[in-house]
Image 1 (tube, one colour):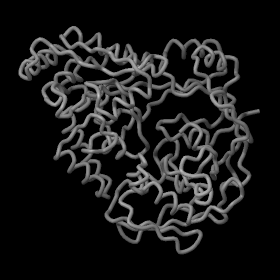
Image 2 (cartoon, one colour):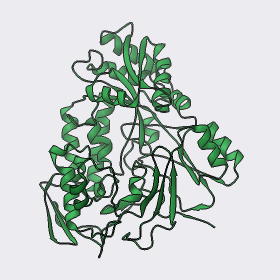
Image 3 (cartoon, one colour):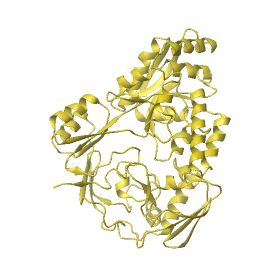
Image 4 (cartoon, helix red, strand yellow):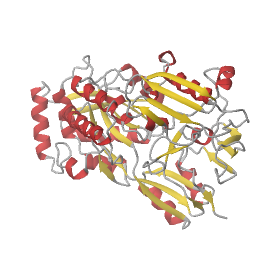
Length: 470
């Protein structure tokens, strides 16, 4: 999601502040004759970067490709309960859903719904490696693992974008090298840092940097395996005990030195749907005075049959592979050890931890997840029975019913009320102990004007209005 938004377009796009949905390839938001029918009009003469026409057939192909069960797209749900896609002419697309789906327009504006060329994919095959999009840029040169250079797409549908004629994205895995490049004005921005000492050092060394503080739609979690095969966490009392024992303020101080706030099932950065902070910090597991939490946790562990503690297999990775996974696991290992909860860290690589998630081969893990601008992605996939993102193996009929209900509820206020009810039930069931999510710092050179810190995986708004001051 770092390069794709600069190469592809969508029907719609979100603005950088995640407040408004705007047209991208289309002339406007869709017309709706009823609750299940959406009609879009493409802008006149839309093209892919090679000059070939981008038509309604390409949009139909893209959505049907995502929606087909046999393709097993992890983003299949973003196409909604798609019944049909009609293309009466080259500029008109009508989506018909089998039932109301509240997130449909919002998901169409997210970064994974990039429109593909049917002709190109048919020729290249499903596992294509080359790029043919309709976004603001095309790739001019690329050295894998080093850098990707972009130049302006002469066939972009918006003649006023992009502002810069060229961009250079560099891959710099070594932190010291990256920091040196920022200090030397070789890079125009370094996005979303959470290491206070590094940030302060760069700001002190380069007076041309602006420090932009912001939230994010990413959340830190202590995932517990809720499957019936897991003798510890299939018991809700043990999950509740872990939630009570974790000191979120201490976790935040150790893992994210820039500071942050505790989060419930929806991260505090997603303020429209998050439980308000003054409410959250009064709750068990979140209240500043841990004495009562610890007392309750010990009683729960004893009632569950673990009065002397428990040994858990905690999957993680090396610090180089993912700093937060590693630091988070170490932080919780030290915290929980004083209560007889021993985390045996099973260190693997990123492929290994993904395999453990898929197989359910773990007791617990610290994990960082994220989503799009649409709230459904934050609550449905991770908690609905049988969903791919439900790595806990968690299942609760009452929560499932509410998650399904919010999807078909088109009134915003009513839908938000359902989502808040879901969070209340999740805080009782605690399939996951939601931890504390950081304040991010994006360092931006003063010559870069219009930069928008990215709040979600979709980075299409990050540089949409940006330009370099001569």
